[in-house]
Amino acid sequence: MSEQTPRRASGGGSTGRSAARKVPTDQKKPADQKKPTKGERTRATILDAATELFSRSGFHAVSLRDIAAHAGLTHAGLLHHFPGKEDVLIKVLGRRDRADAALLWAPDADERPEALLDATVRIVHRNMATPGMVGLYVKISGEAADPGHPAHAYFVQRYRVLREALTKAFSELFARHDPALHHDAGIVAGQFLALMDGLQTQWLLEPEAVDMHASVVAFLRQLGLTLELSPEPAPPTPATSETPQTSGTSSPPPVKEPHDTDRP
Image (cartoon, rainbow, N blue to C red):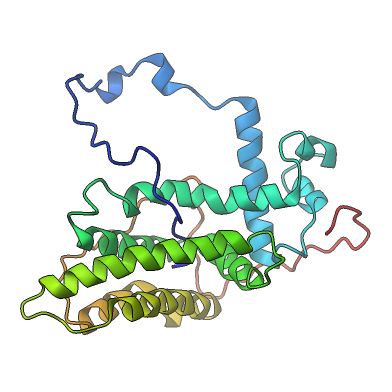
């Protein structure tokens, strides 16, 4: 699943159940309702623009000037917020990961290995409404196979963490099943990730012919697992609030500015 987070969020083990009384939503302190600053809104606009361009054309074909123009800024204005294109890329990739961390690394994940699989399936379901982010991960992860790519280490670590977590979850679920299921949990974890990655590419090519969510659920059922999976997709995040893709839509042509001096 090309869009999941590579790390557990720090402090994720807190359940929020403490002696302190929870403040009702409509009575939150002003500090809890703090609006983003102008700088934060500008950085979000830059990351939105970069997400769209990277998903359309990849990392190498897009320059900082392309991103700045798409965000309605000058090149100097963008550099005031981000020192370089590599930094923009890592922030773009990490933005969704942080949003998904609360789902993937729930407080009870160690006690309930099925929670990780349920969260993964819900994220796949949610991704079917976010072609831009799916395209970004497909495009950049393919480029990042090159050890010199700025996102190479990011994707190596991301897959490593996901394989380890899924291997642990599958191992516990196979052993718990009655009778026990004799699958190699490490191999199944790799197959599960490969299935999701391959489905994303097929879905981008022909969305009306590929149901990523149904395919992932069918794979888990075929393993013999009896899981109660939520029928609801994961909630949208600021980084995924796209207009759902419709059949026949296509991306605009890649941005090309061959005379930009800031290209790698």
